[in-house]
Length: 167
Length: 179
Image (tube, rainbow over all chains, first blue to last red; front, side, top):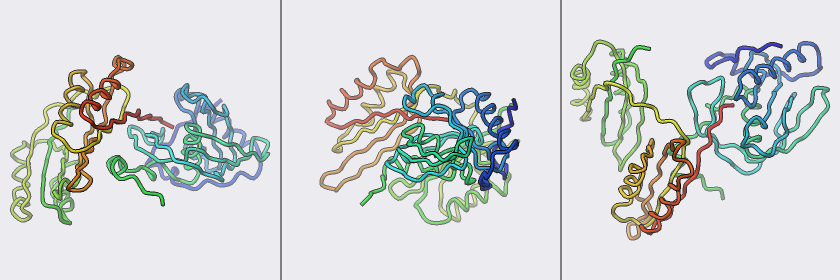
């Protein structure tokens, strides 16, 4: 068991694009264990990306069931090479991030997503996630691209008065 | 943590490019830290509040530093020392939108009700939109509801007040999650 330090911005490693996982070896297994331990140790955390512990590989561990308000979810997920392949609808949350302490901002996310990933045996899977779980998975997969929620924050004031018109 | 020597520097000026550049240059060259700021355009006037910190100066000193800019850019500055920060309210965040045909007293009716219930307004914006013939008044507030206030019917009260004013109201909770 290893609870790792969660990197805080402006650590440059948070802006790196993570590498694909091509085989399950001891290193990958250790990253998965460390991600799980670190997420559990933080108490309130519902997800963590390998980027956040300084490992430049495309792995996310998430567990939307840790949020009592999230009734529909897939429980704990280990996502290897996750890729969002479909987006639908829009939902706004005020997000914060373990890697950006003491700041929250409004972010628009897809309300429903289709996520393709590989499990711990590198078997390909596709799941549909909605609402909180969809937002969580979008936030975490963003980390693998070096994208923080700060890159997606929308102005509170602009958003309240000037909704974008979709034609 | 020791208390910082904080000042509120506020300005309202006819909008044009270069106001923020000129003001921030003065802060930078005189070693002020901008701790917090908010600016927006109100009826064509750029309105800004900067909370800045610097040790060993008084509000009068800060005001003097801006006197040059007051003349060259014709901007009025107000400087106020901030003795101590208020207590940060804790609770659930809600956005309340009240809108309808323009009539006097909309802001006051809502704000008085919230004050009587000790509900803290942390953000408020109002606008008059629509056409000149039929203006629409919009008010958007962000409030923090103390946990002991949850489920006490404040939402229903606001809906009733809104009905009496002939406006529409929408109340929604802002969910914040740290991922």
